[in-house]
Amino acid sequence: MGGVEDDEPPSKRGKVSSGALGGLSNGTSHREQSSFSLSDSMAQPLASQGKDEVVGSKGMVKKVELVQIIAEALYSLGFKKTGAHLEEESGIPLQSSVVNLFMQQILDGKWDDSVATLHKIGLMDETIIRLSSFVILEQKFFALLDGEKVMDALKTLRTEIAPLCINKDRVRELSSYIVSQSKNVLDISSDQEVRLKSREKLLEELQTLLPSTMIIPERRLVHLVEQALDLQRDACRFHNSSVGEMSLLTDHQCGKDKIPSQTLQILQEHSDEVWFLQFSHNGKYLASSSRDCLVIIWEVKLDGRVSLMHRLSSHQKPVSYISWSPDDQQFLTCGVEEAMRRWDVTSGECLHIYEKIGLGFISCGWAPDGKRIFSGVTDKSISMWDLEGREVECWKGQRTIRISDLGITRDGKHLITVCKETTILLFGWESRSEKLIEEGQNIVSFALSEDSKFLLVSLSNQEIHLWNIEEAINLVAKFKGHKHSRFVLRSCFGGLDQAFVASGSEDSKVYIWHRVSGELVLTLSGHSGAVNCVSWNPTNPHMLASASDDRTIRIWGLNQVSLNHDDRHSNGIHLCNGGT
Image (cartoon, rainbow, N blue to C red; front, top):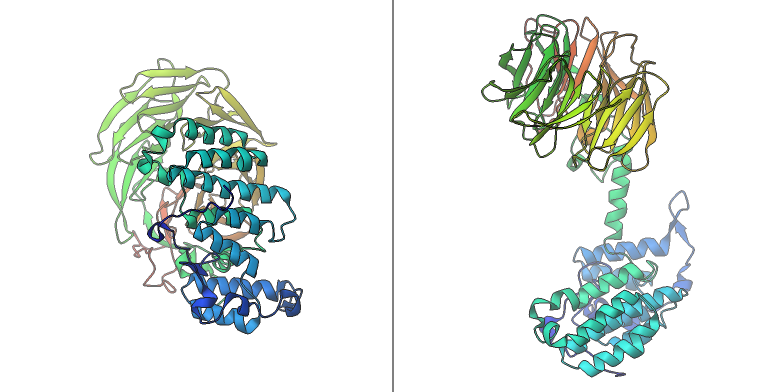
């Protein structure tokens, strides 16, 4: 067994990818490709290069590591000669000679030699050595089976793999390949790629096990640069444009001109206070409802102009809630303690009326599959319906209150309601699990993030709380500044990657905060009455809508003076009925 090597044909050997593994290919090191030998290129040990020498004004960057990740980046970009020259001139190797030898042995299928070299690399952690040995010997085991050397494979399993005491379940699984060799090995063509890894893949797996100080992680410099860009973007209070616009050549900083702050349209079709509005998921439509009992569907044109599409007047009471279907082809409306209606977007036709004798509906929402509907009922229960109007299930008890939103998570497994004046219920309707969010003040409304990981809760004490509800429920941030005393005000997530929080206010303004920092970045003036609801277009971060007691809807967009004509999101200016 000792010395048994894989005689896999050269054509089957996976070439090493660019990056930390990228210096070796077809048995030749990158230094040999540049006309000097591996041993010659290791002219000076790392210690002589000043291993602790640092560069940069803050003394945080080690010179050796910086040179190594630059060299790795050069190799990964295909500049092999330049990378080799950097190693030669600096005297700092990308990897030590023994690591290069180990990697080459893996590429050559010299499994016993590579295990022996592994012990010479200088690893102090015995567990890493055993884990890495297991991975290599497992490859050796399958290579022997592939060559129909069943007894040798069995010996490797018994005398080399099993004594490592790593993953006993996997060892038993390997034993099963011996037992059923005639099925799983002789007919290996369909199974080989799963079990017998390419050598490149094997090296990548070993790279995850070995310390990064020995094998530089692939694309490490690019990863660090991406991290820096992410941090700059997150720190930018006004970032609301695509990541592609960020540059490596300057520090990133946006201005307020990237936030919708100019009134582009004033929509005046409602004859009374506008209580609710919501963009469709695809951003092509806007639905609004009012104290005048009307529901209006607006169409968002390609140029950003919003135009009247349908006026729906079937409700006998003011409409307080609207919910779009997952495919945006239908929507639901709820009157104040009245029936719930399902509508077709294209025709404006009422497709179905949902009713419960002696009761009314206060909220509504769609299951993600679009085949079921949930509703909050005036008896504080929650009902689930099929599209034809059959009540499939009803959960009674203190499930909701009379003024309430209704949220359904993206996986459809949890319903979110306000079950008490100061308490939000996360109800697993299939598992019957319950989680509670306890607030110290009365809850006015809430909004669920697009990814269902966060909940935005508006409170009566003029605060908006951001809760992480993904796993352990915890309070993330508080937003302050808007005015609230007695009306139902609704807030929303919005902007690029939902990086902002917007809310209506009783002082006739729209308030916008940066979600991560909690900083109030803008207040928008224009309305002459309380702003009851805001909605940010989910596909256009530069379009925001607000609904007010002044009977109007305002469409906000970018300041046209500084609008970049090449911007991927744009709005035309259309001031209806006389301007801002």
